[in-house]
Length: 248
Image 1 (cartoon, rainbow, N blue to C red):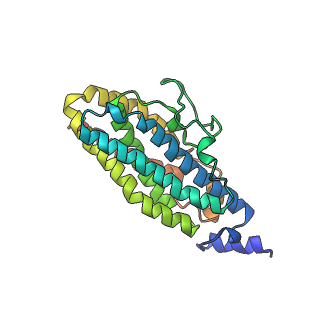
Image 2 (cartoon, helix red, strand yellow):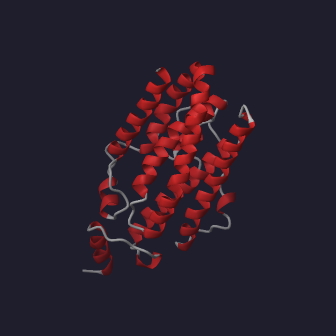
Image 3 (tube, rainbow, N blue to C red):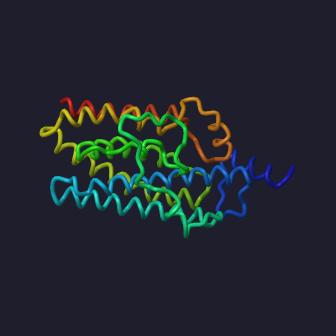
């Protein structure tokens, strides 16, 4: 039995890795894919939300939006440092992609990656106004929390620790959105409901296919534990609760 097989068996049994030198090639590739998707999504999300800061109706809302943009860049930097330990060129990473680029509002991006980066496709859609920004922040925030809770259990310890540190701040971002949503409930309920209808299928798609062929392999490597379907079901319930609260 070769060394890579030994490590793969170790990971399948719940083992953890703590340094790049211990990682077999397939593990490195999947870990880099996971990290790139997170970093690119944080950068693209921050770029889109930065354009919304001045849409905020008051100073409090603009401070909250600014905080989200700042901390998303910080989260990207933390994970990018780990990518650098695996050989990523972190010095030029920020200049590689146009993070502010978006498609037309009604264009269907589908499930395929596009544009040369690894952002989740939900971050290709434009935010229309302040109510739209708040709704997107809440719905994607709930998805991010569920996904980070899953990724914080991954078998690469430095990344799992980074995600555990990031998770409370992403949870606070979502809570800031919920506070904003409560304020919009009375003043702009129609826009909120229309925005929820728009974002729900697009955020749901960020969980990937219900029957992912890659899940079994990722589970063997200790990089995933719960299926896409399980995560999506949890998110659906959370969004249903938001919709119910708005209708009350």
